[in-house]
Image (cartoon, rainbow, N blue to C red; front, side):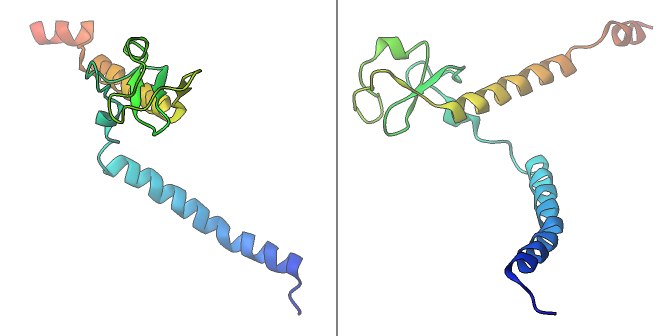
Length: 122
């Protein structure tokens, strides 16, 4: 049987399905095993807090939190002027949301439930 381009493409797709699945599985497993993303990258260089959305950036990609941005006209890292309108960094915002979600989940899991407290007192 001669392989036509359409058949070739179909065979390639069929062969890649297990690989895609394996890659996503490996990615998920690595995500669980590896250190969490460096949330220090979300630290505002002015107030030194982890930035919450909206998070802005200069044209070079240096981040600044929304509380400190109104105080500045130039980036504290590279001294370039901020554009008007200011550029948001959507990726940093998603990472920040993940960070604060993890903090909240950790806080909730460390707070003892009423039943646990009663059991401790027995």
